[in-house]
Image (cartoon, rainbow, N blue to C red; front, side):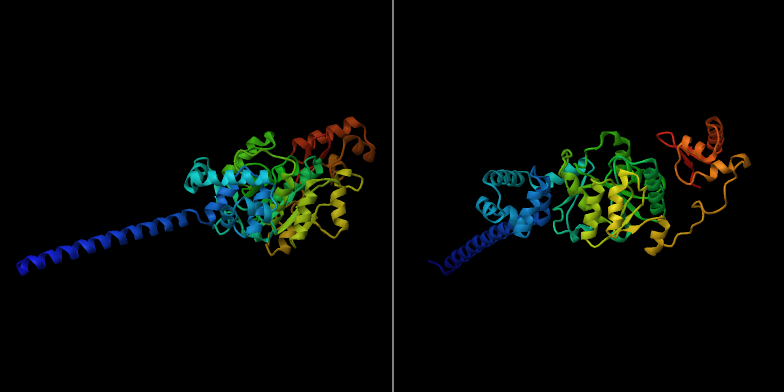
Length: 405
């Protein structure tokens, strides 16, 4: 055989061999890239979002992450480990396993796309707008669901203002004043959007042009109480709504204390405006104290059962709040007292000066008549003229009080 033909066959063989080797290397590289893509797809953040969306109580989800050290490790374990290490019951472990398999089928991109389409963001530790203050909790949320303006204020710029659902006229007046002053000073007012004190705190902050955050005991798309639909819409547009419960979850009794721990953790201080003996605001105050945060209390009438919880906090050493500007000064937020009601005295008709001077606090008409020794019709006439002049206002229940300047 000619030498040239032999050399040619050898060359072809070498080329074919190298082609085969190159193809093998490409396959290996492709497999490696796929593994890398899967690792990136199923990172800790993805697993946390998946866990947060599971139809499993938050206490169970947090327990699994705490036991296994991460969401990834918790999801990659099996039923035997869930039962043995996390002490889950077999039926709970089986349910959790079904949720994990569903997560794997759907994929993380699917979850976030669905949330974004509804205007909901999912925040996990390490995200830019995840509140780092929540890491102070022994049992922090695995993830949060948020709606609203976007970035949440840091700890030093946030104050919790909480209280009873059955707020008195005095309590509502106090919370409006306090929340308004905090908002004007640039602080974010955080509360629970409940009836009474909480809802009024949000409204006052929004009306002052400030920022406020509502922490819910339900999913981010569930308005509770139903009567706060208008306020809820305003918070989603101009403030922030935050919760650890996934979309669609309704409120439940045990979720309110869980919610309260987040309110306390988000804020540098908690202000209790009015609390009865069993008020949920006391739970928020207890969490704040456990976290080493300050608690301030607005004192109320000693004859009122609706302030007994507040007064118990004062007995236990909580700070008294007489003026929100005192708090701002203490926190290094210098605010001028001009325009706060201590400037020029209002022009009161001479014939009604005695009546006006008796109205430092909300007063019922019969009480005013008795103190002044006037007939009722004269008191009503004076109150009507002062109300038309914008000097006093009528409160729910029929009492009157001075308008704040």
